[in-house]
Length: 233
Figure: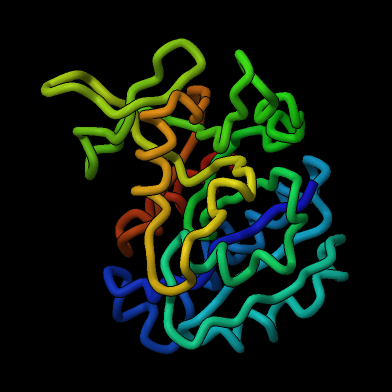
């Protein structure tokens, strides 16, 4: 099972840190964000990786190369302009298995989630004669996103009703390529595709009650750095 790491964001909220350094190469705990991610994926059995990039992406390629130094094999999907989540995945689709699910994770998060739990293809198997198109990992709402995104209803995920409590999408998922079938390439988000699949009951998921950081600002990067220092201290 392959894994795709989304690393094409410009990181505008991280400026001035990202003016000369791509966001995935920002460091916390003595390692870049993307190295943390790759090491976790490799530890959990994902050795065949696809990474997309755009802003200062040549720096990411230079830092990681073919992945051999981290015990993985990396293929690169280069974007001139960031294509957002769905656009980036669609462009990288020739590098992915066309009929097999794959794990997809944002480069700018840190978590202690166990990725190996997503290796089971049963997560996206036929349920009541209907194939799931996505399996999302949800987390407790962080302070900067208190309203959350989606509701976990048993093992299905749906949009919340008015004022219904919701959890936050962690940026960790398993997708089936069929989710992106017949979608035109270009700049587009995966959220509308997921919402359409949710209406058909074709998105499942789970809740991760563990450590999770969304590194969207310099302050949050500093918080992760302190957290990692505390863990090793």
